[in-house]
Length: 179
Image: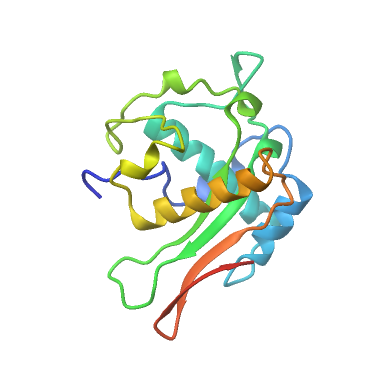
């Protein structure tokens, strides 16, 4: 999507199932990932979704989870919040079944100033939620950002047990619901 701001991301690779990690996903996050699926998903498969998100974050932005300023070979998945799932409507040339995670930079040890452009993403910017409204974003990126912002108004800590948004189309109607 040229000239459009999107979240870093990509597909889960088979090798993501075997990537090392430190602390595991919070039990509620794991449970929600297992529920938010069209076909059976194992805990290893659900964890691989989170590990794929971190791998893609590093590949596309250079950002890595760190602990006490040191890069981790085993990222702590416990700080990840599962905030949304989006399924591209049928009939599109490319279809996606995407999960969106978020975390706080201080919990993950991420310094936004360390972000670097890559072959996949350029003009990286860490945007303040209040100034993001004027930026050209993919519609799903904007929707997820708006919903996470609303969650934060209700509870700035975004509890790990917070509701998970789900976006999909049913019988020609767009649904913006919850898991």
